[in-house]
Image (tube, rainbow over all chains, first blue to last red; front, side, top):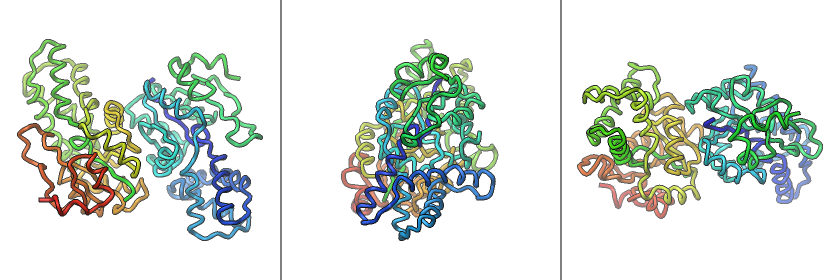
Length: 242
Length: 242
């Protein structure tokens, strides 16, 4: 194992709290009332369908920033919220300022001592560069769907990153809080590490509370992964998977 | 100006001293006599012609690691030096362990406070990731010719990086120790910063000792660039260019 690539939205950053917080701030600043939680959750619900439109050829390749904006406009219309273009642009950039989970910076620093660490994300490069700068994430490389013009879980994204690292898939581990992402990586021969983010979707979250398969590593967070998991792939999975 | 992209070989790292040093170490370890300086200089002389073979379609897209290896084999044959494949592979990886010039780490850290900082290099991604880890370079992003399947000075590399940053060329500055690289960037509308590396090719260096055009910034090194240059593009050029 030479490199660990990380899902970002949910696994590395708490996008939901970050977006709600920024909507709250905007509400105060503009003297508006906004349904901040609903806007955040509904915006994220439009994420997978918007990428599916690209995946199915309904849209040509479109970066996530632009998919986000299209979804946002649709959502604001549904809620009857009228905002000027500059404010819509500004809200779209909420995705560029996301707070990491508390274990992330320490965990990544430690993992970086032993492994190449990189993103493997559907976010576009400029979005990810902004997030990394805002959240002080010490990536060795930013791999994005944008580089391969395919969205996860298309195989091109996972294999594209391995190819650029000049490593066979079995020497690259995907770390993610989402079982489906890990399934796609494992099917291609990559190593897998699950860390739960049980409040990614708020307190009512029902999915991805636990590992659903015997992933190579299951750890509580990135610090735990750095302490025990990644150095002994396979070690924790049987003990912890459901 | 939002981002600065950097040439790496020569501008950021002292590849020549690093290679000579590694050849010297290998010589001792293997109990061989090697023409360390000649091998280093001749290997680098094969760099531009090897990329030209790709640029002219004589070779399909080939990453720098593979061009380096082909040149190395040719060179060893010319010198009548017989080495096994594993040793040749090991020598090829000398390019992954390059020492930065003394101002680089401090200069990049300071520039990163104000600008997105990234590579813009003909080195492939895995080579650049290794160099960044070895030399502790705090890049926000690693842009490589490999992402665009074109070598500098082809415009695709410069414009490709601007496109991924979602910035117009005039908001991106190329910093390089080579006037020709800056000429290519300026022709596409990018900002330009020259820093001299007068011993990149050793004490006999004749080229790129000074700025040959009125670049937007000319600074002695990256620390000087961070102090005065980049924040006032245009400020130093007329005073210092030849």
